[in-house]
Length: 491
Image 1: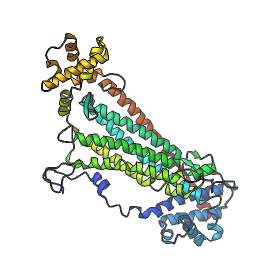
Image 2: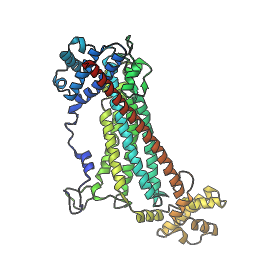
Image 3: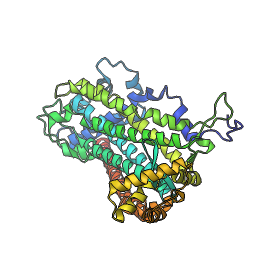
Image 4: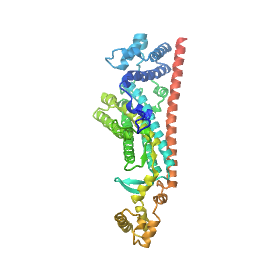
């Protein structure tokens, strides 16, 4: 239904793809994806084994060539083969069948499935972490852009669902941006943990072979090595860190969605969502349902569930390689990170497209006496103790209510001191501009906060770009090294 009468366009295509696409077959290529990572580690391992003098060119070159063939074939033979002892051994078995035990049997020298699995999980997790941080930075940039646009659009802040003090739309959006930036930093910290290589740990006790594990780590783009071989295969703390960061993001997104759901109601009317951000009803022709925000709200707790599941799986396992930790504890990570990226994108689209209603916001700030605290503070500045000023202004607001929500300045019998305090703060916009402490809603304070947030976002973006560049350079180095091995083998 692209035209419901009430709505003149369908939901935005990207939102429809996120919310309504059939993903029932999406994970059927999981084995191929895992084999792609395994084979990438194997290529680096073989280059290292040859460089360390442990495997001659004829063996290393033949293995690299056959692994590349399997990759071109999308591992069809391995995927179709029985796997009574797991995916890697089926893959290794295919190489042995093709090349013989003398060549194929060399592949796993100095290695265990324990450190191999730990490595492939980190390779996958570091990309997911980078994607989530990048998506969140995009949301932050959108928030800051809209904040600049609405730096002087006055609205009331709420506490306990009641009007509190005057702020601006820009002030609110910048607050959300700062919370998002903290979550970006949490992701980057977790990303640091994923970016260490466990290769060489074997089953936990390392290996007596003289492996050059620094070379392998470099070829795979890792920033360094895990400094203990037991910890390398025993721990998946980075999974908990990533899920913890995703949980924080979910909490933030859910709270913002709750605000926006209230603000888009007819009763509040602070924000209007265009037709491509809302849906109609199958029965009620007048409806404009902000259901995208409900999806955001509903998804916001999923990461917390994944975190609890992972922590529960890991908590009773011994501190060594463990299926409970390495398999069950990591089971929900990738799905959670993907859905986090998608939910962040949903909110980014809403923030980019929403249309604030300045007149309605200002009217509510006035009618809700959002300037009352500023009036009390003006009395404080004139020498009145704050608690006395609080009581006097409270009584004044009560009189204004009794007079049919009259403006404070219209209440009869104001003292000269109270009249001066009210007069200096009769406009919510004036109160906002006088709230000029660092981090406050005044235009100057807000612009400074936005600039500071922009600087931090730029630093986070640069960090992500450096990581991505290191991974790309490592991949190019690995491809070159494998090509050189194959040329030597062919010669």
